[in-house]
Every structure is written in structure tokens, then in C-alpha cells.
Image 1: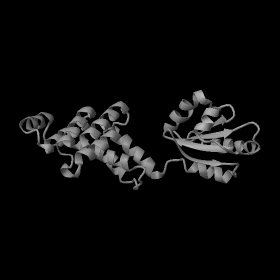
Image 2 (image 1 turned 30 degrees about the vertical axis):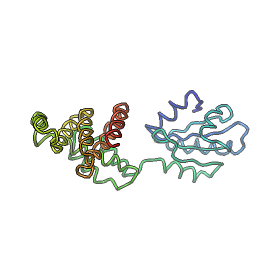
Image 3 (image 1 turned 90 degrees about the vertical axis):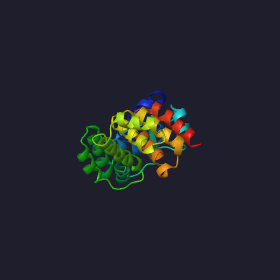
Image 4 (image 1 turned 180 degrees about the vertical axis):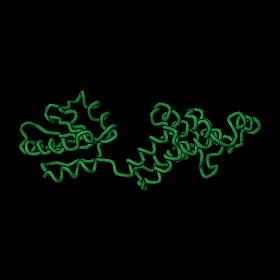
Length: 246
């Protein structure tokens, strides 16, 4: 597939949020490009449905070439989750191209984490927790893992302990009851009422930011990950958290 500056956002950045996209910057006059392109196309066929290959004529799309500092071609850049994650320059052998594609595929731990997240969204908490146990620690996934663990805890909290009305009554009697406020935030979050949950957590931070070694702040950060499909909400409460902290 040939991609141009107007289609780059959709065909590369947005598409890379679903599966990795490999971009081949080339030009018709480039001899090494003519050697590499058939290899890329052959390997891409073997990875069909798992990795997407696109081509960009660097001469005709100077804006993109400048944006990605293309100085020499062929220059191949891989994108995941809307970001460039790896690249190579020059014509390389097929074995090295395959290794480059392999590194873009999710690891067993990443696949297990994705399954656990799916099970959690389906309300299958025990299965989600069991699947989560198969995820090996990786700094790249730490925020997602923490958010999922917190989400499971929130969902379970709603099945036992005091309800919303009881917790609200406690706070009406004593607004400084941080335990009650934290529990109320958990109930809201368990019901995916993220704005209300964030309000309660920000209030704790505002009143006592170091309470329980910053527990409210930690839970807010997890909520930001849980509410990742609501970027405007997350941005709003990141600002509120910053204001409460500083």
C-alpha cells in the first residue's frame, strides 16, 4: 500500500493502534530500495493480519521525510500504538527482515495481559486474575498491570462492604474520613463512574496528599489507565491532580 502525507495519520498512526505498521521510505531512483522492497513484501505476506506494510515515496512526501529525519534510503520504520518504535536503514538480508518483524509481535506475556483485560471487561474476575498470573513483569506493561489489578479490586469491593449511601453518610458526618472517601471512590470506579471516582480521589489528595503514602494519587494514576478511552476526562483530572499536589 502506498501512503502519502494526507493518508499517513489514518493508514499508519491510527492503524498501528490495532497492529504494527512497517513503513518503507523509498524512491524510484534508489537501487538498494529495489533490492529491499521485494524482500519486505515477501516477509509481509507471511505476517499478513499481524503486521501491515506500507510504502512512502520520500521524494513526493518531503513533509513526512523531514518529520522522521529521513537522510538515507531505504529507511524502514515500525510503528506501534501511534509511535515509531524501531527502524533500520539500508538493504538487509531476508533473515534480518524477519527478525525485525518478529520483534513487533506481542510476547506471550503481552497476549496474556490482553486476554486478562478482555476477561475483566466481561466481568469474569476470577478468570482475569488467573490469566494475569501468567504475565511476567515488564516495565512496559507495569501501568496496565497495576490498573487491571486495581480494577479487579474495585469490582470486588462493590460486592461486599458498605454501600454508596452509607459511605456518603459517613462523609457528611466527617469529611476528613479518608477511608470512607477512598472506599466510595472504589465503588464508583467499580461501576465505571470514573468522573465521580476521580473527584473523590482528588479530594483526598487535596486534603492529605501524603495519606497512606500517597494512596489516592496512586489510585488516580491507575484510573487514568482504566479510563484511557476517555482522553478528555483523563486530561481534565491530570490537571486537577497537578493542582492538588502543587
